[in-house]
Length: 231
Image 1 (tube, rainbow, N blue to C red):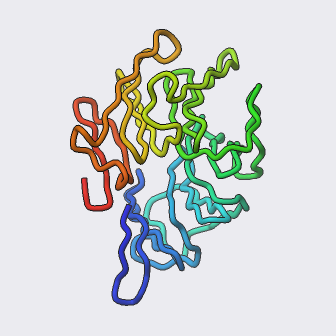
Image 2 (tube, rainbow, N blue to C red; image 1 turned 120 degrees about the horizontal axis):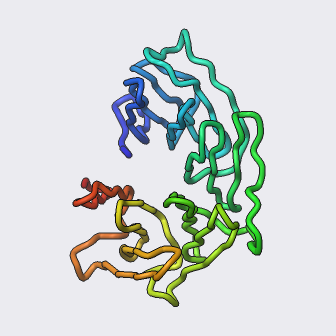
Image 3 (tube, rainbow, N blue to C red; image 1 turned 90 degrees about the vertical axis):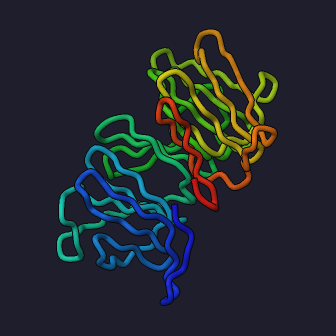
């Protein structure tokens, strides 16, 4: 993620290279692909098996993935959605979207509907999503971590009562052995989800600056934290 302004006043929000080696730049007034301006703003990008999704505060734009994209061969499909914050793909044509109002599901690029979860009143904000085997991990704004078992449709909620450092979860990184949760007050490392849960806290006492956290990635032996001042 890049938050910067060039001399023309264009506000850079991200730089991303997709699997077709297209370069994407997001901006508050317009976006760019391979250096060419496309007339839609974007603050987030997400790549599915078939499409590139650009997200602004009120809309999603889908572009069919291919090489050498430019203004002459790009087609933007548009769907209206309020304040999308995070995405996760469940297959070739199903994408879950977290918003301020809950969790939505996009099927193909035809419609967006509420994602049905039993026993949840989904008027809560969703800030982060992850997938660990059959478990859908849902990071909420104030309600901790929801873990949804996609096989038996059971739902568990984990909060500060079981050792989370915060009930607001802004980032989720799924590794080979652990799940990492990021918040504005520190990190959690979780293992044994769905079995015997173990929770470890990592806070400012270990030298973190969690209030500046923008990115959380698991690279096996290393956890990479992106902050407002670098990695």
